[in-house]
Image (cartoon, rainbow, N blue to C red):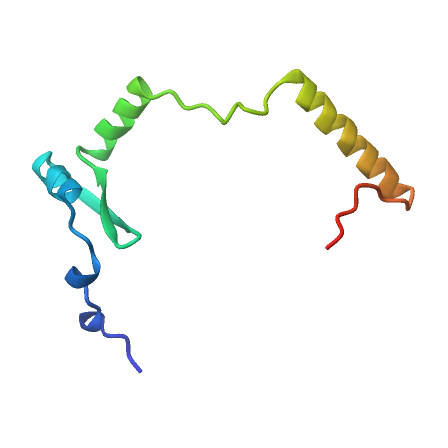
Length: 96
């Protein structure tokens, strides 16, 4: 069987919400589909979007676990796990 793109329903399966209409009015230039909804991916040229990200956005990892005590515990437990496994007596084994 040959794949025929004309057989795929596009409009009926994609939800067009007030959010979608607002993004169109704002001048959105591209969309992607997520969970049957059209989401905006860009409003300007890719270069301008990238420069805006560099200038106006601060990215950081989730910092809820990042502290010295946790890192010391992670490192200590990892070393203990590897040493025990190499000795043929693994520890902290998960049981189903």
